[in-house]
Structures are given as structure tokens and as C-alpha cells.
Length: 278
Image 1: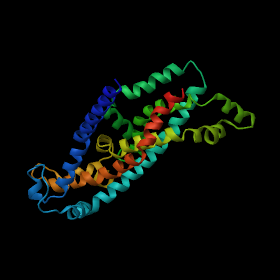
Image 2: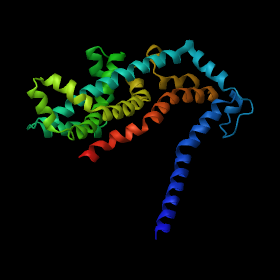
Image 3: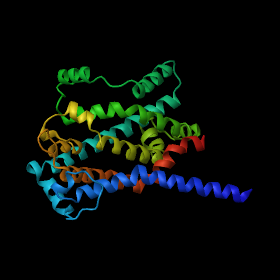
Image 4: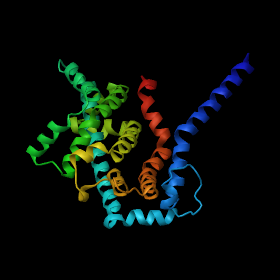
């Protein structure tokens, strides 16, 4: 009986590895091989090893394209990601702490609004009108606020589950020692949220950095381009440089891929910590 269970576990593990290979590794290898080809070989879109390996030349051409637009895009995406995720962490932790610690008749309404933020799709045209009225359209500040508003619901839900596992006695002890609301939150509660904060930072950083739709709608213009919008540089109705297009995809994919690989254990720990401790 034990041997049958062991064999079934091995079989499930092998199937999982094969599925993972097909879904994740093979597409990445395809992108890499296309990025290493010249323009003529890449135009066929065949899955084959390049005869003329020119990955580094393609990388140099991508960075030099359109007056080094990719460098400006990395700066814009970096500022957008850091500012958006920082605001999500602070605001999400504050809202989660208040919702868990203070029971009120407004809590069901707030919970409904949070769930609505996850379910209801954003309305682009009214949002653009509001941003134009406030003078935030085509500005990095406006896009940061958009990213925060779209990602805040997910952040609150994850952090609230973790805040609920923190004993209330810790709050009471800090208040007895003379801590006010802000000091209680920033000096006592926020450091205890370290694992879930890492999860939110990694997950939301990947989402914001790889976001294509919101910068396209709310931050148009070459000077404001983010890394995802640079894909337009190598594809048009008349001509497409697939080798440079896939090289650009490879370049903008690597930072978030490396971030995920290094912090995948922290992501799993932060996602499951609330249910385990509860």
C-alpha cells in the first residue's frame, strides 16, 4: 500500500514537472532563441536554434532604438513601481488594521467596496475625464494613483487576514506604555507584517511593472513610455523586426523574473501565513 502511494506521488510529481516545463520554460526558450536570431531568420517565427547567434547585438540595438527610449522607459517604470507599491503597502496596512481592530456599522459597506474593487472592471473613459478635470492626465503622478486604486483591494484583503492573527494584547500593551495610534501602527504593528509586506511588494511590483493597459490609456506619449509600451517600437503594419521585438520582451521580463525567483518562498509564506496562524 505504501509503495502504491509512493509511486502515485512520483507520478504526480513528474506530471507537474512536465506541465510546468510546457507552460513556462518552453515559451521562455522560444523567446530567447528568437532574440538571438538575425532579422531574416526571426521573420519565419520558427522554434529553432539560431544559426547566426547575435543576441548581444540585438540587445544593443534595442537600447539604442528611438534615441535610447528603453532607458527612459525603465526609469519611468521604476518610479511608477516603487511609488505605487509603497503607497499600496502603507495604505493597505492602515485600512486592514482599522477594519480588523475597530468594529463599526460601516465595516460591511467598506468590505463591499473592497470586493467591488476586485470584481467590477475599471471604466476607462470616465476615469480619463476625472483625471483631465484634476489635471492629472498624462502625468506620472496620475498613473501612480491609478495603479494604487486598482491594486489596493487585493492588498487590503491579504493584509487584513494577517492582521487578524496578531493578538490584541500587543495593542493593549503598547497603549498602556503610552503609544498613540500612529506610533502603535508604525512602531508595533507594521514591523509584524514583514512577511506579508514582502508578498505584497513582489506580487504588486510584478503587476505594476508589467502593466500594459493603464500606461497605454492614462500616460500616452514617448516621453512617458513605460517598458511594456516599448514593444511598439519594433512592430508596425508595414514591417516587424521580430528579433528586436523578442529581445525587448526578454529584457523587460528578466527583472521581474529574477525578483520572483529570489522571493518565491516569501510569497508563499505571506499568502498562507494568515490561514496557518489563524
